[in-house]
Length: 275
Image (cartoon, rainbow, N blue to C red; front, side):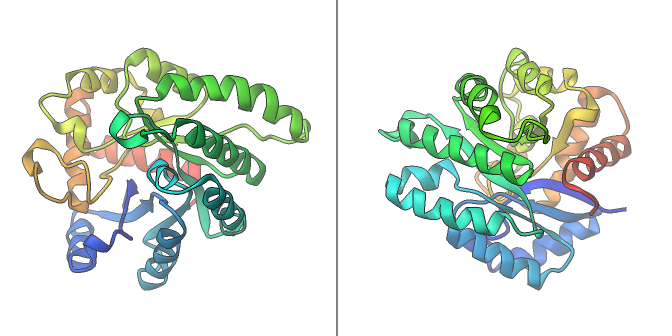
């Protein structure tokens, strides 16, 4: 049985000298499938090359990350969206992501309106392609719900064939919100994914939230090479750290580690298709 890292960045150039060893170490722990988080066109190309190099191990995920949107003009974003529509339509692409909003002032600067527009267009694309979404949300959980309400529920459903199922499905990567925010995403049928921050002593609120999230709605991730636990603070986060995350979930829910690994695998497979 192979366990699944629901979100990481193996295409990150920082991993060029580490990737093979990290994959080997993760495989020794039983982790053998790695869902990617898309950043922009250059990253999508690197993902495809990795999929060829490591057949059966890489889940392709293409989207315009908020960081990419911040660094590019609206015209550049529109050109990239045209390319995304073609790339994401392929059978190899499992999801549209990571997409969303990052409203930390030092990240967003003056880009909020552009982020919202590009995010909305990617939601529409995912709905039309019937692809899951992978959400990146920082200081934006409530605004995202507003966009779902005002844009997707009211506007997008009017544009699309009412006879077809165009509902959004997917997950929030590295969820770190309150229980009240978590409930709203769960009510929409979205899954919540947690990673290294869950293993930090300072993450008490997140730990309480994870106790409440139904195991059937939970995924685990590394976000490798980023977001390490306290144990790895200051280092790049290896793929094998997924087991540390799973152990913390098991402790919080007072269940067996194997149940966490199996359930999160099953949740991912149900969402994305057989792996």
